[in-house]
Image 1 (cartoon, rainbow, N blue to C red):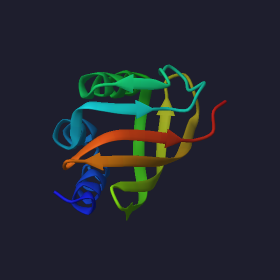
Image 2: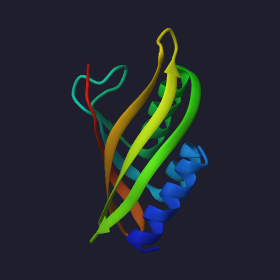
Image 3: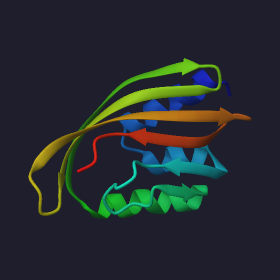
Length: 122
């Protein structure tokens, strides 16, 4: 698959809330995930598809209710793509909020090999 095809499939899965399916199908076994330094309940660097899937499960356990997501993009440049995400979420013990972030992905050999997220911390 081309980078554009992978980006489109990633966005489709995210719109459907199928994060695990996106990771299992589109991510390389040795993918790297980078979060902002100081992010809540997350290591800034996670290596390997299985560890990334587990990171997602841990985030999901902190969610009281997921109200929806808006994705703008993806925008493709060479073997990278980016998208903005706005997640309407209520975390356990916290008021409802909209979290905004920019996600950047690198694709090699028809698989996502890295993802990095940019957002406000604190």
